[in-house]
Every structure is written in structure tokens, then in C-alpha cells.
Image (cartoon, rainbow, N blue to C red; front, side, top):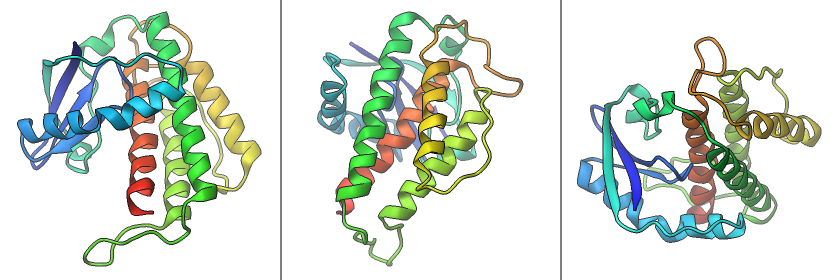
Length: 211
């Protein structure tokens, strides 16, 4: 069984797995959000297999529903759930590290191998490869502040700075903890794990789909 929650915004609903960081998709209704998430199970399995994890989702069961925020309507999981206030255990921390390492490695591979210019939408919108990669890195630096990590802005091609940032993120999210936010006004670790992984994988899949 896969436990999920639904985050309900004004225009979008995010279906998000509680135990598998990064497996989350959006829809205009609850059913469409769950269907979109289910449709991505095989793509998520590629990540977990590369990460050395056994992914056997089984039936999907909605265990919580929360009211979303503006972030939700942008298509991102933007709200911690009640369970996030509980212990962040060793197994969850190890799973987070494995998924994040694989997501980042996949993104780095795409940054080298995907076409520089990506297919655009019907109105010509959308970022190209390097813009997406830079966007992910900028957001990771911003997200890092929510778990007590502060870094000055750096260019996307500064590999030393990026490696140091990601190593610190893995150190923090790879450490079991209680459910208290990791800094004042910040995120509990379980929610942070989902948010970091979702953002990396969402853009991995975007680059793959538009290449």
C-alpha cells in the first residue's frame, strides 16, 4: 500500500506520497491528481531502482487531505501534513538520501546530454535546458534556508559550490530527527525531503519530455 495525501488548492490538487519523496503529481480534481500520480509510478520506479531501493507501491490509499496555498496552485506540494510533526526515522532519512542522490545525478546527466534547446508549448513558452537547471539550483539554495542552511548565490556552473550545498542538504535530511522544523520558520524534515525531491524530479521529467 502507498499512503498519499491530497493538497487542495483553489485551482489544482496535488497528490503526494508520504513515504516516497518526490512522487507527486497534480490534477484539476482529486481523481485526476491521483490518476496522474499513478501514471508516473513507472517513471518513479526508474529512480528508485537506480537508487537501490525496492519500490512496490501496491494500492494507493488517501490518508490525509490538507488545504493548499498559492504554491499548490503552481503545482507544487506546499503544505506540511500532520504526520510531518512526528519522528523522522532512520529508514525515511536513508530513503530520502538515496532518492535525492539519484534525482540529482539524473539531472546532472541531462544537463550534459539533453538538447540545449527544448520543445516549447503551443504558445512558445517554457524554459530551455540550462535555464531549467539553473532554476532548480536557485530553488535548492532557497529551500536550504528552510532547513537551516544558508549559502550565497552562485552560478549554476560552479560545481564546487553546488556539490558543497547538496552535501550539506544530504547531511541534514539524512539525519533522523523529531518533527520540529529544522529552523525558525522552516520546514520539518519529512516535508523538506518531499519538496526537494519533487522539485528535482519534476524538472528531470520535464527535460526528458521536451527533449
